[in-house]
Image (cartoon, rainbow, N blue to C red; front, side):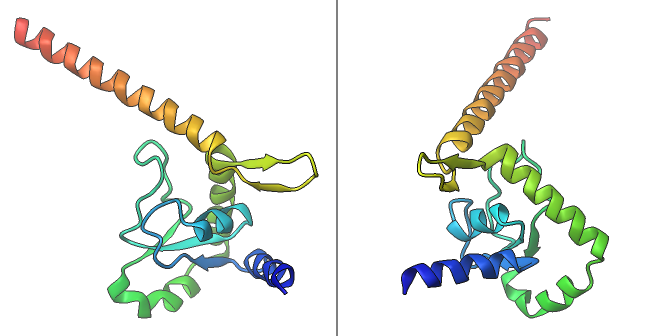
Length: 146
């Protein structure tokens, strides 16, 4: 039954401290968003492209592992202190709510907001990047004119 499998999948993530997001080289991976939304710490490979980098700092949330050293992952996770894990979980939840968020539907259900808040954040970041580039260009021109 698909509904039971979906519930079991969500419960597994909710009962997990860490969620491995295999093949997640980009933030559009459903597992990445689901892990964040459900309070788990995403474990990604070092090739993972962090969403909205460098303006959004994910270092206090994600656990990264080199694909060639995946065998070291259990040791790496076990060596983390409870305080470090709690801090990462808090950072992950904060980033989820600030950057991604939820969509509420009229029927009372919710789902991860993959377009609204993320799009708004992306547009604010593009605006910031454009302003920085224009300021840099202005300073270069002033320097060269002196």
